[in-house]
Structures are given as C-alpha cells and as structure tokens.
Image 1: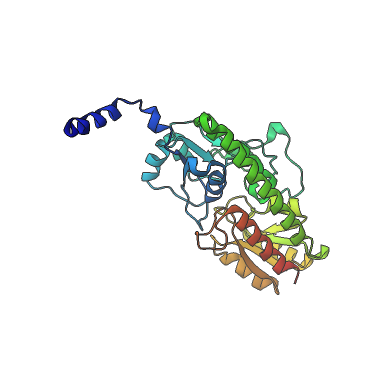
Image 2 (image 1 turned 120 degrees about the horizontal axis):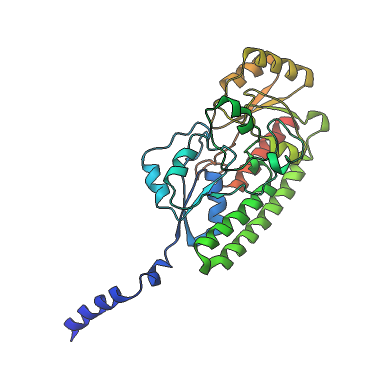
Length: 322
C-alpha cells in the first residue's frame, strides 16, 4: 500500500492546474535604476522579485548593458523605466527585449524644462514622455533634451511613481491588487514624513546662501521644491555625457565669484575632475558629492530612496548653512 501511495501522490500533483502553484510565485520585475527598484520593493513587498539593471553607485547616463541583460528583461512580468531619456544607453535594449509593455513610472509627473528651476511644469503638449530615447537626428536634439528626467528630487513625484507601479503590479497580478494599493498608500505616508524632514532641514539655510552649482543638471526638481537657486552647471546638460565648451567653463567661474556660491554639488558616481578645477580657480568653493541617479550599496549611506534624500539634504545643508 505504501508503495502505491508513493506513486499516486506525485501523479496527483502533476494533474493539478499549473496556475494553482504559479500564483504563489512572485512577479519577476526588472527596473532600470536602483531608485525605481527600491520604490517597487516597497509597493510589491513579498509578491515581487525586483532586479535593477543598473547597479548601485553608477552613472545611469553612461551605463552600458551586458548581453545577459536582454534575457533578464525578456523574462520579466513587469519592466519599469523612468523615461524622458534618462536611460539613454539602455532604452534600446529594454524596448527590443521586453515581452510586456513598459511601465513608465514618471507618467503623469509634471516635468520641468531643462534649465528651469522654477516650480512650473511644461505645458502638456510639450512635456517629456518616457518613450523618448536618444536620437541621432541633430534636428531633434533640442526637442529630446528639453525636459529634465531627474524627477525624484521632489518626493511628491515619487508618490506618483508608487501609484503607477501599484497599477502595473495589479494589472500583472490582479489577485493581489488590494495589497499593492495598500503598500503604495503606506509608502506615500513615508514620503509625506520625509518631506517634513527635508523642509525643516532646508529652512536652516540662510536665504543669501541658497545659490548652488551642480556638476550636471540633476538637482532641478529638488531646487524647485526646496527653494534653492541653481546658477550654473559644470556640464550644461541633463546628461553627464555632454562636454562643456571652454567659454562655458570661464563663464561659470565668473558666475561663482559674482554670486558667492559656496559649493559645487557633484555625484558620487562621477569623480567631477572638472568640478574640482573650477572650484579651485573660483576660490573658496567646496565640491560636495551627492547620490544622484543611483543608490549606494546596501551597506552604504543611501541604500534606499528615503535614505538618499536624507543624506543629500544633510550634505547640502552642511555645505551651505555653515
């Protein structure tokens, strides 16, 4: 009898519907950046298995994918991208490899124009979309670089991410839609608390000292939200891959001297060699490294989005309020 029982049970298991077991498997989620991955894990909880294509401490603009990334993308149930041409070296592979429609986490975010640090969104008809990717046609270069993709500098935009991600997870896994919505709501509560912390920190900076220079155009949303003025950038573009002209560098040094800028804010992922030269030539200017487009390693100071924002805010305040 025991021998027959040992044969019948495995046979019975094989006859059960595949979906009975498949529904217990977490969604395979691929995100482009570690910041998006962190938000996705907060929204998905135990029901998702999230992999970021771009590793921690990386320059998102300069990242080049490996061949195995295509297979990872192809197997994903959900693929999350920032959009607005942030992932300029990666989007072509993502678009060609994904077997599901891409989820644009920044869909619905009020975009700022490149170089615009006022808290004003572009008109809808000219706003960036996540489908935008690098184009070789020089006639369209300005059009495709007009909007700033670094939207997570304002936590209110990340709240929009959370809702978009919850909707994508619910579409792929309707049985757990309520859980995704509840997780997103709980995470947005954390973002509200984060904003209160950041507002208190930035309020400590004297009005006259709220002028900054950045290594590239990555702090527009944070500046607009918390009352900083970006008076110049070392690399006058939304990408680190651009190069400044000599006359731009000379003009920036003059601006720093005229406005009394205390610090140039560069990225941990970019050594900022030119920023160091400009700071030296301008005199009495500090170069401060911030986490911009990627989180730190898990044992680092910016291993989550909320930690990244806290770390950056404190570093900014320490540089400007002293």
